[in-house]
Structures are given as C-alpha cells and as structure tokens.
Image 1 (cartoon, helix red, strand yellow):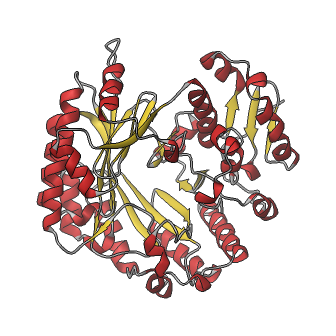
Image 2: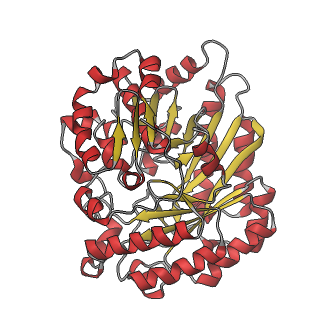
Length: 467
C-alpha cells in the first residue's frame, strides 16, 4: 500500500459527502475537550504539574497565552469570553491582577526555560493602549526569559488601532498579527454589529508590513446573516489581493442558547445549509486556486508559511489557539477564562472577573477546573492530533510510544472507520491510516471515532456543526 499522499491543494471537495457527514462535533483544540475538565483540579494541582515538569533537569520551553477580555462594542456572532465596556480604567485594574498571577507562576517555575511563543487574545487585546501594552510586556519579561527568535502574536481589531499603534506593537517585539475581518459586505456587517470598512482593514495590513511584521493572518466567517455566495466572493477578491500569509475560514456556529449575544441575530436571515455549503465550497476553491495550502480544519497558509513547513515536516501541533508550530512547549495561560497545558495536564482559569480577582486576592492561582490525562487519554490524543495535523497516522509509532496492540486496543474504532473507507475518505491497513483529499474536509468526523467520551455519551448537541 502506498501511503504517500502529498499535502497539496485539495481538489476533491465532495459536497455530497459533506452533506452526509455534517453533524456537531468538537474542534479538538484539546483532547479530552474542555467540557471534560473537573473542578477537583485546582491551583495546588497546577503547582504539582509544574513541579513534575522539572524532574530530570530538562525543562520544556514555554508558550504563553494572555487573555484580554475587554471590547468597546459587541459583535453579535461572538462566542468568546469578553466584557463589553467603555470604561477604560478597568484595563488598569486587570493588568494589576495579571501581574500578580504571572508572579505566582514565575515563583513556581525554576530554571531558565525560554518562552518561544507569546499570543495575546481576547476580547480585544488592542483595548489596551501602548503604555498599557508596554506595562504588560514588561511584566511578562520580568518573570519569563524569552528565546532570541520568539514568536509574538496579537489579535487586532482594525477599528481600535492606527499606524502609530501598529509601529508601537512592533517595537514591543510583536512580529505576527491576526486581523479580524469576517466579511466586508456592509449589509452583513450591520446584521452582526461590526461596522468595519475595507480601507480601514487594509490600512492595518499595509502599516504592519511597513514596520516589518513577519506574518499576517486574516479571519473570515461564513454562515453569517445576509451572506451570499456572490457577496462573499467579493470579500475574497479583497482578501486575496491583500495577500495575507494565513487565512482562517471559520464556520459560524449559531448557538444562542449558549452565547447570549447571538440572540440578537435574526435566524431567518442566516443562509440555509445548502447556501452555506456553496459559500464554503466557493471559498475553498478560490483560496486554493490563489495558491494557499489547506492546512486542515479551517486554516489556509501560503506554501512558504511556517504552518505549511511544519506540516510538511511532521511538526504541526494543535493547541487552544488552533494550529501551532510549537509542539514541544508547555502552555501557560493567564487572565480570565484562559486555558493552559503543562505536561499531561490541562487547566482553565475562572470565567468570571470577580472569581478571578478573588482567587488572586487570596493568594491562589485562579484555577476553575482542569484535568490530568490518564493513559487512555494520552494515546487517543496522539491519534487524534496526528490525524488533524498530518492527515495520517503511523500505527507502529503509536504502538511503540504507548505500548499497545493498536488493532486490539482500537478494534471498535477500526470497524467504525470502514464506513469512511467505503466513501473514499481514508485508507488504512496494518501500518497506516491515511486521510484522502476528500476526507480532509471531514477530518473532525474521523477523529470523533477515536473520542472515547463521545462514544460513551452522545452529547454532540453542545458542539458546533462540522460545516
């Protein structure tokens, strides 16, 4: 059996199969998923995880995530943990607590493990002005040493920055930018309460390139109210002309029972399933025709981008920010609702600002819940992430790493894969599982076969649809 299926531009978008398998499922930014975390895992548990990582004297490098929850206005589609406020003084108070939280981790972690990656997300990180951003970066560097070539990225709302802000972020060490766009159609923007001109957005891109940002990502969403194939095609004209290094094409998941702002969206204006599929199909074709490689899930990148290189070299990783090139790092997460990973453990901070502040006031790490992975979790995570990141799986590699007989351990799962094989979505034998090009658009469905928690309890209604 020839297992070499090159990671090239997908040319087999099979709408019929996508219709067949379109169902709810997790995005697997972690396995087990965050809804499996337990409250018994607390601040003391995190300290034990930190102590365990230092046994043996060889420290893993660090990746840092900082959550800035504040936004000036509300976008109706948003499912992020955010706080809508015009009171900028709240940022000052929040920074004080962030500094105290970082100090706790700085004291717990000994040695000189370097920070290879920093990401600021939200909310709107650029709710902070440059002086506040300087204060935050100073606090981070005070507690954690940075690698010389560290990757520092920040999410940008173009409505909150100007050329001076972009230049200032570059001077602070940021070298990667993620720009929220969603859609340039004015009618769609009005429906979701995010009025953002094309020129305003493209000006940010030009400013970032002028001051030397290494990589620029643009976020798009399909499935928003009033979206049409023709309208989104025009948005893609502008996006492709701007030539970002990466493009994220997210599926809008309408879950108003979970995310209150979405209740303001008129469901009757949402594109139906068939129109949504047509928008996605058109977008995939246009992006791949423009030279972007389909990385997986909802990400596209230029062939020379680090994500593309990491995927070709088998180094691609998955974490709470999506695809990453830093598989070897422990992820420390700071701020309200932030999720981190230390060795074989996950943790999540309190989701409410009051609970977050209260824990820090009591001198405790502000942990709401977490999980220490067991042996079964670890092997299933390795399988799921190999399929998500590489579109293939070496059965021998899993057997050697986890000391299992793959065929016996996953007998039920392999039987379930036969339906996907019959539909041409994957091929497998005793050595490999390889996802075909049509199967790459349904990789989440394939991974769900290996999710023990989903097989035990059918709770898919709480997840977003695949398409």
